[in-house]
Length: 63
Image (cartoon, rainbow, N blue to C red; front, side, top):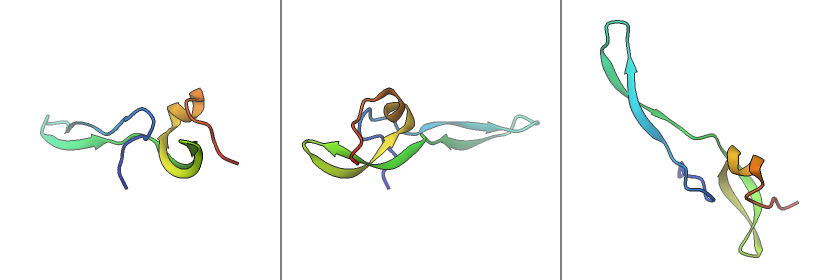
């Protein structure tokens, strides 16, 4: 699964876990992607879309 929104291109962010002793280990923040049926270029497809694009109406859901 590609962890990228098909509409806006949002993908993971990176950073560090920081412990109490300030030791740093790498970590990733993943976007909230949902696999939904949408109308994509005139046809129905299942694509991964972030919840922000779903909520704001940037994509038309297929019923």
